[in-house]
Length: 374
Image (cartoon, rainbow, N blue to C red; front, side, top):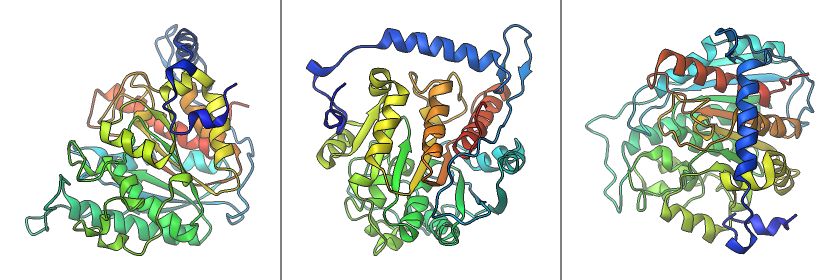
């Protein structure tokens, strides 16, 4: 096997590359068949034509020593929608709750402390605009909303509760990460996403702030000068060595330069093909060992076949089982203290698309928080 250094900003020399796409297709084919036919997961059974029930089993995975016992999950709804242009992400938190979130968490041994949905500000004509360079859409509404998220996450984290934040678009990641770092500054961030989300206003091609949360919390280009984001000044800055990506497959050119220049550890879908999902997760957990972990999971990391109701779908994503293994492996580390589930958008696609996506988001939460097949 290649040394770990070969995946440091995982743009590897072509001489070291080995194509395993054929293997991936085999894995994907069998994974899809399992997800549709087994009674362990909700899916569509091609033999009967009926939806099958996904079962939740508490496997008593290792529990972080820094969390309080008995274990309490603080559920925070962050119905942000202004970080991107499509309506509907604000419905994500309640859709996941209504799909059975509380019952599933209780069956896994968690006491649920649901803090409800935070009130997200709306853009107003009096909001100060971003004057450049570049673009930042609705900076005041998004920035003040993320400040609210930050305070709520910080408080729950300081109370040693597991913090589950339901988005909302991924701009809320700036608030969740900032809040967690104030309570546990050494936390490692596992960012599961098809996109790098490390644009700054000066390089963003769209100005949509759901593509900027990591640049904001890393202090790139003085983000506290953006209207609505003044609160970032004085907050802990995320170090590149604290961040690891998995699932990347749609990265802007300017973002590629940032990732390379900062030496951030990235596992694209190429690396999932190359090492297998088990090998990728071993490398991630070794890199972030001994740190508390925060898992920020954008549902668009999953292939649209399994999670179609999201705003920025990209083909070639994580299969059903790969997506679950990411959550399971981080959960089994005994270091997971917080989780975001974002970009579930019930307004996109058919009713069946919405149901599949919501169920996928809920299932991934359960896998991260202790559910296993046996």
